[in-house]
Amino acid sequence: MTDQITVREDGKELAYRYADLMLFHGFGFPGGVAHAFKVMQRALPLLDNGAPPERREIAIRTAFRGPGARDAFEMVTRSLTEDRYVVDAALECPERGETLARYVFVLSYRETTVRLQLRDGIVRDEFIALGRKADRTHEDEVRLTYLTQEMAQRLLATAAAEVYDVT
Image (cartoon, rainbow, N blue to C red; front, side, top):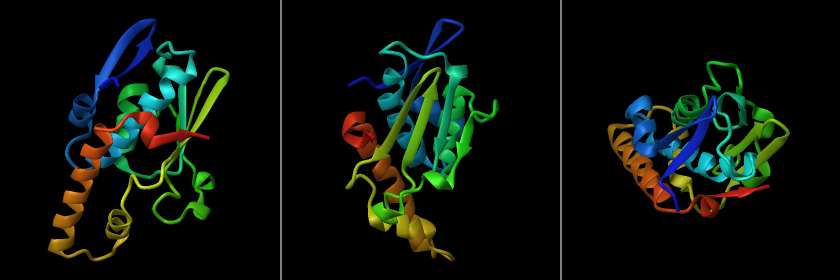
């Protein structure tokens, strides 16, 4: 398992670690950054027969609304700035339940498209419920922070193929 993701820009390789993405994003949503990192670890090798794809040719559509993931994708692909990043509610899978419905990512590169969805058991129901709760208390905020950090650590310790399925 590699602890980085690699893309190319004008044929030259750029490698990113999770810590690099966190420096760009900041401290707010480490779980979202970790999800994007795992999505890219899983999808990027599939886009160009194992070769790092050209970063500025990767398009991303997702039902996931989190700013951590958005920032991670932007740093690696520049897709938000260049209008190749779309949050699309039509990708949601409500039949998978509240916890899994929005963890859908579609990455396209040249003639190849890869669709990923999160495996069951990775994100805790408590995390989703607390994240969507209006008027969280201080205790709720503390718990949500813990759950976010714990999820990020679990994601980073798990192979991308065990986190996201290609569908």
